[in-house]
Every structure is written in C-alpha cells, then in structure tokens.
Length: 235
Image: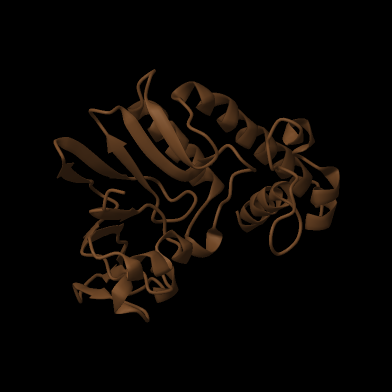
C-alpha cells in the first residue's frame, strides 16, 4: 500500500480530520477562516481544528495540537500543490455543508473531489453549527458546474462518482423542496406541521437513503426539511 503524503481536510468538521491526523505524519492542509474581533469564536472550526484570528495573526487551536494543519488557506483565494507532476488545486467553496468546504481539483486527471456539498445518498446535509446553509449549497453547486467539463469525474462525500450532468436535477430538487417549505412557513405552519406535510414526498422514492433513519431521530428527509424550515424562519 502506498504511503499517504498529504491529507486535505475538505470541510469544517471534527469527523473530517479528528483522529486521522494522530495517525498521519505528512502535510495536513486545511482551510482557515478569517475572523474579526466582532465575530464569535465558536464560528472557528472547533474540536481541535484551526482558525485564523485577525489582528493577532496567530493560529488558534482548541484542544489538540496534533490536529493543527501544516498549511492553511483562506476563503478569498486558492492553494495549488504540485504532487507527482499533477497540479492539485484547493478551491474554497461558498459556505454550504460547512463554512470550510473545499473543492479539490486534479486538472490533468480531470477529477474533482467535491465533498459533502453533493450527496447522492440521502438528502443534502447542511451543518448550521459550522456555518453551512442551503443557499450556500446552491451557490457551491453552481460553482462546481462552472468549473467541471463534460467528462470531469466528480467525487462526492457520499455515494458514487457523478458528472456535471447529474447536478441540475439535484439542484432542482433542492429549490423545489425549499419552495414548498417556504409556502408552509408563510402560512404560519409549525415545524411539526411542515414535517407532516412531507415536502420531499415526490423525491423520496428516487433518493437512496432519503427516508433512512439517522442518528438523533427522524430521517435524512426530516433533517433536510427542518434545516430549510429553520433557515426560512430566521430570514
């Protein structure tokens, strides 16, 4: 088995790096978020992840120095690594699944690792605790579509490899469910009312894992609907 030389954390989650870094002694690369003094520190990737504090210009770790990346990059630019003759681009995505989502593009191989911005198992998973948003998912999908060629292989965080031809239908589903939830929110419905109305019903049969129970209760569909409801209520 070949030895890993680089580990790229493509989302702002403990599960995205966590204990893996303890067993890995190569270059760990992670996106860092620039913060201002007025922003709450809990918006930094927590659980041992890294954030850059404006003014102090220091890397602030939370509890575990072994999880500290050797290199970081911000949301306003991208980083290119040259590995075995291949240019590997790390491209920041809009805050979508989390506020640290990253697209990894292998230009010569024509492959992009797009992470949890796209899931073809279950409904989209937006992590609001780490800065994710449904509108960000849509923006990220648009960016991926603009960067991908007709034959580019897109590797999602969950499920099999796709191409850009698979994205429009997925995006349309998100927009349709969001519109249905908004209609119910505008009618003053409670979250339980909205869940009972099953805004995802037209898609449940065609989305593998969409109605599968998830940890914490409910299904992937319930989680997706609840996220949309909370975002719309918050304005």
